[in-house]
Amino acid sequence: MAVYVTGHKNPDTDSVTAAIAYAELLKAGGEDAIASMQGEMNPETETVLKRFGVAAPEIMTDASGKTVALVDHSDLNQAPDNISADSVVAIVDHHKIGDVTTNNPIFCCVKPVGCTGTVLKQLYDAEGVAVDSKIAGLMLSAILSDTVNFKSPTCTDEDKKAVAELKEIASVTDTDELFMEMLKAKSAVAGVPAKDLLNRDYKDFDMKGNKVGCGQLELATLDQVADIRDDLYKAMEEQKAAGGHHTILLMLTDVVKEGTDLVVLSDDASVIEGAFDSKLDGNSMWIPGMMSRKKQTIPNMQKAFGC
Amino acid sequence: MAVYVTGHKNPDTDSVTAAIAYAELLKAGGEDAIASMQGEMNPETETVLKRFGVAAPEIMTDASGKTVALVDHSDLNQAPDNISADSVVAIVDHHKIGDVTTNNPIFCCVKPVGCTGTVLKQLYDAEGVAVDSKIAGLMLSAILSDTVNFKSPTCTDEDKKAVAELKEIASVTDTDELFMEMLKAKSAVAGVPAKDLLNRDYKDFDMKGNKVGCGQLELATLDQVADIRDDLYKAMEEQKAAGGHHTILLMLTDVVKEGTDLVVLSDDASVIEGAFDSKLDGNSMWIPGMMSRKKQTIPNMQKAFGC
Image (cartoon, rainbow over all chains, first blue to last red; front, side, top):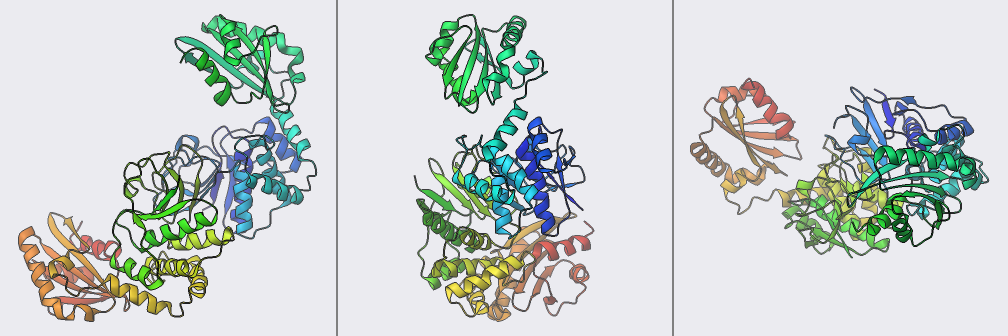
């Protein structure tokens, strides 16, 4: 019976490419393996597969009656539906150890590195299997994406070593250019309604009884949104009116310059200025170094609200 | 903070030697690591550590406030008390994936091979760390023990390869002799009361309302119990009278000859003869190939009782 190799729900580039790369490694070892994914690809992943000329994996969302190898996750709520302790035959990941258990010993390799692609490159090496040049391009792209071109705090020397070796195999001379191509695909805003952009990656928080919403758009350059800033602000106003928010923030994060232009709509903007020790210029302020909503924006806001 | 490396509760040779070997590997990588175990060593493990001149690990049963690396298990009920999702920093194992979860990515390497020692040998190789000759002796012993000198169905080609390499490093020329030394230590009966031998590895089962007890002694040779068979039978009679059993079996398993001399005390011995298609000679019968209570003895008994 073929093993379905699959990444997590809402697949990203690492999940999709790791499924392809691990399926190839299993096949090199004589196993019957099928690369799969639990939903449609995002624009970044589409760009990567197109660039390296690799077909999309098939979609598989139900593990009933199947054997599966999990890549890029080991949590049941991220795994295909109806997964059981008997269906999982392998795990390759770089996240925290999740709640998947098995009834029999299986192969499981998890490493605290920036990307599953890095773990897979090491497994290819350990098993003495040559990486196909197209597959190398996919793994390379995943590492650049997951480590934000080496800028993420999750990036390790092992990720950099894997990229150095994979770029040779894939004949990619300029990894910055590859990263920018992915980033542009990921952050494309043309033709997308402002309301959808605001909600592309958006969360509400309760801060001492005040409803605070925060969206984030990761951009290759702020120029991408230069013409639609008024539309985005209008979408924030509509969302605030409908939701009864105290504050709505929109992080326009420039991944290359490593900072965020923070658009602020608030009942008391001085609290927000105080939170980030900065002054609004119109309805926004540039905050150097701000990249992470979870690690930077929200903690400062909670502190300002006395949470 | 030093990492405590520990095997499972009721430590066996693999758990103890894997803790020592993995602590050494971590130290070779510049980490501060302490080999530990969750209880006293059994006679087999004592023999192994004495033979290769390695000191016993310290006993550690409470993970409160410590960071721990788990070897030879990944189940919470086998782990030290008060373990938390934040205390586990690494897992190296060869069992099914257990229920340990973490809050952060950690190193986790689990392989479906016969022994943690085999996984560790591969990790030393992958990291280019030379195995110390004494440590090689410990790993070698663990693999021979866990694979029952390659006879267990869990034994893989990877275990055999690891043994071939480790015996060179440890300068062990005769692994059969090493295995026999361990087996004799493990199966020592001299001076042990018959009642204790009967209960050394004993379980009761309910079979259609009939209470059936079954003990097992793994021996290097049946000669080890030649002089105490009457005492063992008397212990079975006392246990049957006190427990109201229908049947008590004692498996005297000859690990070298790969068979069991089954001692039978039963209200209806013909059922037991039928279960194993064999005839009693006095109060016992030799059953070639019978090694596993769980996989061979109990299933046949259940069938005979119509369970």
